[in-house]
Length: 363
Image 1 (cartoon, helix red, strand yellow):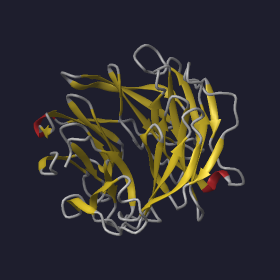
Image 2: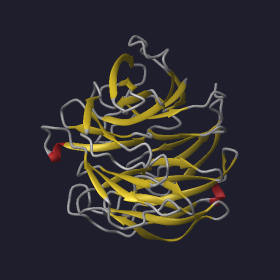
Image 3: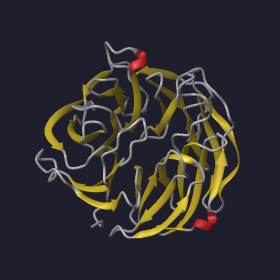
Image 4: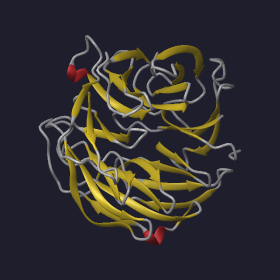
């Protein structure tokens, strides 16, 4: 199976990038621990810091994250030929997602300074730059002064008729109306609220669509919201909270990053200061999608700073360790969702921060 791997090539202060752009690796062929140089399909001269990727049958969408200049959104064909570039207006573009008609990007910071979300229409993967829309969020600050001095959009999550945007700086998840014809519509409204200082980063739905999970980076907690028929939170306050902080780790020394959901578990990657990263496994009821009253477990990622995790198959999870230049594979128990480390490791992509499986038609 072919997997696109995003990386950083620059030193941005919070990361000392050693990557060469977007890599293409194969599972399990490149997970022999010996392969040291993967194929680069999008060089850093085109996208210096491709920190998030989204793959469809027609295109690979890539955001190029920059500190001092506008981020960029790129599209590439199945043979990795360019199919358009759009300026994202604001800086620190950190997320991309695709719908059948639009590509959505989140700008963590802006010139205002306010975070924003960008929408661009696409035609079978070709970006139509003249359709770009930018929606900015209110300037608000949370209690964690070093990280919450203003709004910080970290994701754009499409649901029925809207896009949900976790705002790490404002401790809310915004909702922006959306339609396949018009793209983003109107001003943002608050979809749900998170406890002060929690710093919501990513969200995901249960496989049956009954719950929305919001992963909070700063508090190392997972918030659970019941949703309405459109997939939006039915209440502004969470129905449950799961502590994903690893045992014996101080709250201020752990930050969450990635969130993935299967039918029977939620997986959260946790970056721990000067220590091995962890994956928190919270079990779910496979019938209802709700968290079970069962012990939360953790497994080490065998590297530092796990920026991304993906469920490659129902039986395999991969963890990308940004600061260890490794991607490790874990077996997934089909009944409980429990993780077991394997001996499979890829060392062929430097500073790996995002993993995007590519469909069989990709070269």
